[in-house]
Length: 292
Image (cartoon, rainbow, N blue to C red; front, side, top):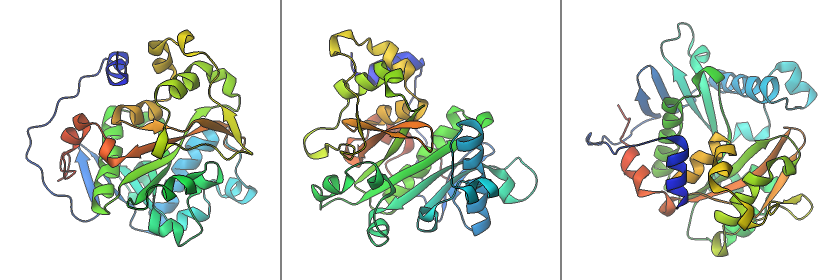
């Protein structure tokens, strides 16, 4: 059984393509579903609000330990925030300032911007430079700091985040996406089934292969392939990683333990050309599925 079929069976999900005519995305608003909207942050105050959402998820919920100034300010903030675009999901039914409406966020970094400012965030954990060097004809974008407030962890919110990512990638002519995705905790052995499943079934190979930096690399090959129950493995995957797999993503061949964020990280690699036709059809070849 294919990974796509296993994913759909595990989730009990049926996604049908839309017959709605596509409307090209313009400006910074990428889509709307009901009271939810996805677009780029427009002001420093909105970026600050997104950092507050990240703090609530990463520190208050996941027990990350940030630098003292960030902990004092109750904001997840680093130097990359100044050069990234910040994708937001807003709940327009919430009364008050726009900043109070932000319920989810992603951080997006284009290759040309990263290279002009010291490189990608993921390069601190994974050998992304070698990956980029093998694809001089493609422009990469990094996805990071994905988080959604607990009350909004629904299919609609996830759809809008991916609508935003897809629209942004098309708008800027991106050829591939990559970024860290995390398991909770700093003991990879606690995720032996899931990590081994990823290693044996969706590990990036050949021209797309990527490994953790040698000084940080932790093995993902913790179980022999014949001992892996694929259905059980899929059920133990974090929702974000499961979502990437449905799109057609691959993963790094080794993991990294991030003690500050209390996570075990893998690198997700998603060539645009590999995105499942099912999802291209769903969101629209011009990202018009949920565009206004």
